[in-house]
Length: 383
Ligand SMILES: Cc1cc2nc3c(=O)[nH]c(=O)nc-3n(C[C@H](O)[C@H](O)[C@H](O)COP(=O)(O)OP(=O)(O)OC[C@H]3O[C@@H](n4cnc5c(N)ncnc54)[C@H](O)[C@@H]3O)c2cc1C
Image 1 (cartoon, rainbow, N blue to C red):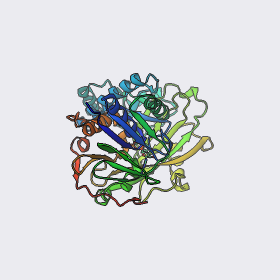
Image 2 (cartoon, rainbow, N blue to C red; image 1 turned 120 degrees about the vertical axis):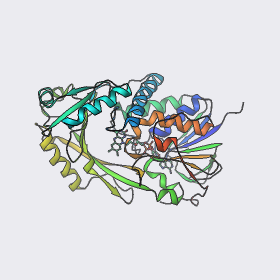
Image 3 (cartoon, helix red, strand yellow; image 1 turned 90 degrees about the vertical axis):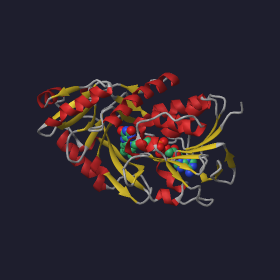
Image 4 (cartoon, helix red, strand yellow; image 1 turned 45 degrees about the horizontal axis):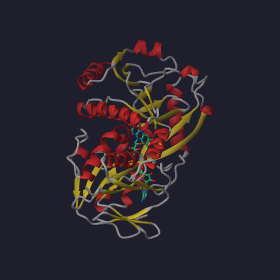
């Protein structure tokens, strides 16, 4: 049988995992990225990303996250590289919400326990949780060392027959029949194209779809824990401190610094520019963590950086779109949580690219893709 030829645009977590799924199913894959492979520009390229089950009040997403967790362990086994660190996740919330969220996790098959306010203070003396907060602790949750995983995945793809990687090549046009034009004028042709271009995807997709997407920019601090890293041993990821600003923390894992951010440090922006946070955004995070961490020292902030992602303007989540007759599939927007779900999303994208019945992810926008007329941007694309 003649193998399906798949061109993947984008070497972030979605593009690389989709390439892996396709080649494992016998396809020939060409993967192109405007930067390296893996790409340091990618939103996915960070020290770590949290993988946890609890999506408060949402049983469907919580069940999907349990499956995604298993998907990450499977990717780790395939790559033979350790990148998942089971540090646990602690989600603080008003006391009265805890029983319902524990029940949600129980029904999804995820282990969890309640930590009442008094126990929180005793177990995590460096953290000042707001009054009236208890927490749900998920022991199986953890951190994917993102940069390590992406490098291992790119290395795996490099060693597999049937895969050609094209780092440093920018796609400028995606044709409805499966052709991808690259800067310099050459063209890659495939039976199918998967566009997984992260926050840049509007440049390659029909303007009507781009208009439905919102670009977000989020500031994050890198922090060297005070008094010492050892004092933070055993600190889980804290996806929510239970503050109105939506503060969250990633602990030191392996050799990574602490990462600190908040929903309030995420804002809508018109375009992708630099990654240097304006002082205002950095300072508002410093002010929040001065309140939340007992030993917080602003001088120990190692740096701050901004990341970008696209989200559906209406629902705030991801967007999967089929262009024309199905030769082109675009993960047009990743929303703020596609890293965690990437093993499920990649399998669903590969299913569609290969013409297989798609696995259900539990993410409605992925299971019910948008269908778009095959209009494409003119050669050169929007900048
Ligand atoms: C601060 C921050 C924190 C986050 N935390 C979490 C979290 O804890 N958990 C979670 O699940 N998610 C989180 N996310 C979201 C998550 O990181 C993203 O959903 C995910 O990484 C998106 O991956 P991607 O592969 O779709 O895009 P990207 O990783 O951005 O990859 C896109 C790739 O496409 C390439 N590309 C773009 N245009 C072209 C072109 N024209 N030609 C060739 N190549 C091109 C780029 O160079 C890039 O390598 C966070 C995001 C941010 C910003």
